[in-house]
Picture (cartoon, helix red, strand yellow):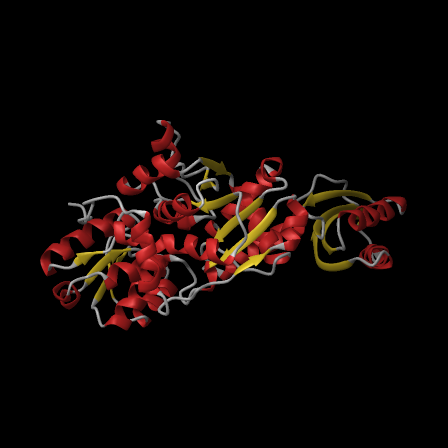
Length: 410
């Protein structure tokens, strides 16, 4: 049994325009900023729509709110239900509470405690069922029937799609004339709603969707491809195995292109947004910039709008990504150094590194588990540097002093 969707008709640009004043004042009209540093790096004229600044940290509030505001009095009294372990859950919970509508959110039992707690704090009843999203969705359908609740789909609902499309209206009103907009695609609700608004008011603006290469579900529906879908992606917010039925129709009619980006470029884009633009996003929020980084020639000289769709990223994951970025840039490296197993060698190595203004932050000796001669030892040192050139200078000076050095890891 699947949750009921209301596919009476595809939403239109008029529906998006009607949603804008309806939700105004209840959600944040997020700023659109000119990303001068990113523009200089890529050759494109980049503008960022900061949906990561919504109260719950993601654009999902727009569609959920529009749906709730269009419920009948009877539907409001009975309440709503959704299956979600992410941004949709919190957006729906927040606005349902504000409108006095009972909300039930079904989450897999594997959902991190912090997400469960945050959703409950926003006033929703949380039901933990199943080991994955599909099992939770089936449980939601059963509860929906038992309680006569209204199911609020995260993307495949005309009113949700219209609500998400209000982002494009704000971008067209507040930003410059765009040659292109790049929008992340999971199930397709965001790009479908935005495309309706953009193609109505600015048909010459190219609408480009981006998916992670691990989850090319919408691209498969577009070109009949059979690319495998699944895996562990940084962009979990767009990790959708099956595109929406409504959204795929709109995408087929209104989207100019869909591109895929891999995990490495997503990670780089997230790091650049954090380090250069000082903007915190989740993996899906970095997908637009990843598209430009992956093919800068395509966007050179063009005015491009990117939607930073969310900023909810696990702190440990963010820390790991930033540390990996430091390593790739040579600002953090682990060196493996061979030396005589005798007193004073560590001090000597540390002095050489310090004399080159390197910062020694970790040391490990390997005496027993080594194929070196018995009087030799292997030492791993982690060095904090100013970049690749500085790192090479440290290595050169160690070698000049007679040490065999190799980079064990960046």
